[in-house]
Each structure stands twice: as structure tokens, then as C-alpha cells.
Length: 219
Image 1 (cartoon, rainbow, N blue to C red):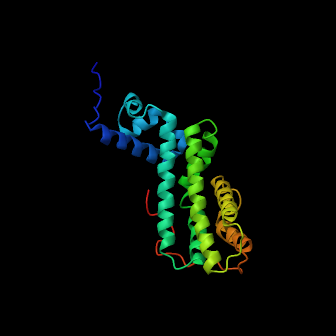
Image 2 (tube, one colour):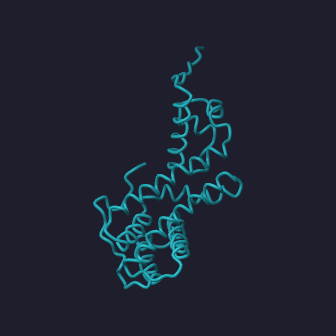
Image 3 (tube, rainbow, N blue to C red):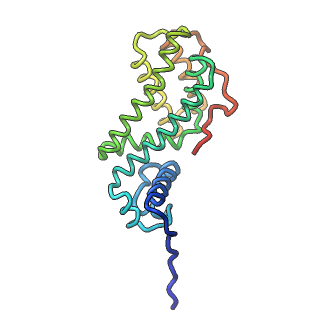
């Protein structure tokens, strides 16, 4: 009986191989969630052995944390770029709510939800989650502070308002993952709530969408 031959992984430099493994982990997390990241699954996605993955990334907790960081930092950068193209804080806050609640980022929502759970046992991941939550709060707080200065937003604590807003977004998105409630109402519900929080008239945050519809353009 003949023995099937095993295809050897192509030879690459250590830097190239490390980047390849990290990218495979990122794509796997977006496809199947952070819980899917194991030596075996990453090796299968990369086309190498689990031992080779462990050689380049000997600390699995750190690889999971790094993967989370890469995914969330890319989303923050993309959303910040989207907001920068809009004319004012009302349009920016409306577009921010729309793009975070339109369902196009559910893969990243899964990553966040699993990170909060897995982070209880993974200190490196917990630190990454806190860092990226601070980064998101900074984006939202900046829009709110500009709105107070230029667009009639009413709050004496932009940081707390940003924290509350993100909590609502996270909760609605987590509920949508299990199809609880009417997902199509998420945007209008939070628009009304945030308008109330900021002392704005009804419909003030119904921003004109960008040509891309505010949806993600990168993967």
C-alpha cells in the first residue's frame, strides 16, 4: 500500500512566516470567533504544522490578544477615517451609530463578545480589551466634545456619555447575534436615545450616509 505524501510548506523567512501565521489567526477569528483560535486550527489555515505555529508564537494567550488588537485597531482606524470625511459632529455621530449597528460588523461583534468572556482567563487579552475599549471611548468622546463646542450637544461629562453610548451599542449588537428583537430597529432606537442624552431634537442624528453606506470596506 502506498503512503500518501505530505506537501511541505514553502520555505519562507522567519518574519514572513510569523506574519503569515498572524494573518491566518486574524482571518480565522473573523470567520469563526476568538474561541476558534487553537494551534491546530491556525496551522490548518496556514498550511503548516501546529509545532511550527508554536515555534513562532509560543504563547497562545498572547497570540489571541494580539489578534484581537489587530482586528479592533483596524476597525477603529476605518471608522475614524469614515468620520473624518463628514462635515460636522451631528453627521459624524449619526454615521458612527449607523455603521456600528447596521449588521455589517457582526464578525467583529463576535470577536468582542468572546473577548470579554475569554479575557476572564487570559490576562493578556483582558489588557487588550481594556486598551481598545479606551480607544473606542476616545473616538466617541472626541465627536461629542466637538458637538458640545459646535453643534448644540448638551453634556457636562463627554467621557461618561461616550461610555454610556458604547454600552448601548455593545448591548444591542450582542442581542442581535442571537436575533433577539427587531435588528432593523437598532439604529432608530439608539438614535432617539442618544438624541435625548445630548439634548438634541428628534432626528438630529439622521446623518446622510456616505457613498459606501457607512459599511466596512476592509476585511
